[in-house]
Image (cartoon, rainbow, N blue to C red; front, side, top):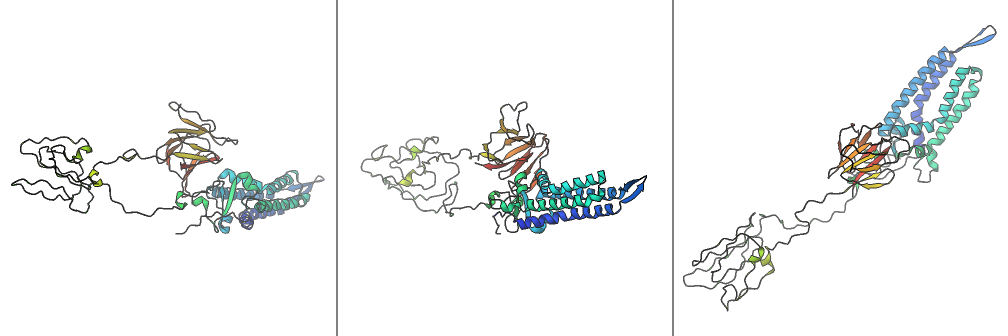
Length: 445
């Protein structure tokens, strides 16, 4: 199934449409409840003074503020965990952090605070109007403030139009270090492994498959008759039978030399153990342990009892097939990939066996020799010793050290799981670990 690998920044129009949809329920509740509250204010004259009864305004205004705050907290939690809001779903966009994962509650709150700064100022003015009973001038105070607040919110939302980096970030995104993507025109990074994407999205240039002979002993090979050297015939002796190639045994058989044989047979094995000649009738055979492949080499003419005049065939390259060459690294332990982490500020570190991560990490008893990785955190969202990492070949075991703000892991498929304090969690390459307001990405060198 084809996957769109591009990341498309959300256009200003879609951002504004999503913001209007998200704001509309809260604004509607506030307008209705405050309108009812203001309409219920009564004015009476007592002792030459005008007394205002604001009980209805307090009641309905409190109800409106409570409902609006509840709605805002629900939307904030939804966007913090998944990048979704009612407006984002309707317009097909998602908000994310700078790594392409769910933005988190802190970033979403900061974005909303910057965007709605004008509206908050108008609400503060409404409270002052009630406290100081400026009801006659309320319209002249709150009307302009609401218009300015709405204009400021719209300006902030569409401010990505003036971003020189392809309209990637608005003013609120720059402050909160967030991004907004169009998931209808491009890829959704939150569910597909962040900005980088999982390893499975990388195109692979695979070499063509080549058929090769199996090096494992016992593989069947075509049986062909191997040529043999001519042996001198003696009266009453039978000519030697041709030797056929057979699959090599799993364990090499012992070699029984026969020095008194009139002429040894020289076989050319392809992948089989050498054939031992029959023992001499005049000398008892001796069984020798397998020592070296050098004993398999055919004797030279005129040596080791070979009568002069008998020609020994020249050695073929296949005759030395038993001299197995040891390939460098063969039989040794498999190479283990080196694990590395890349912090969200671009720094890259190779991991030792044991690593402590935090604002100023300090090892406990028995951890004096652990690798200490200090991470800058001006906002003090990271604990002094926040995480303990233990490398384990194909991944790392991550343990949250009872940190204040907690930790979480996002797998390459976009699933974010909070870490249970004190419980090691196995993390594979391609995942991201979030601790406080910081994040690191686990990869292999």
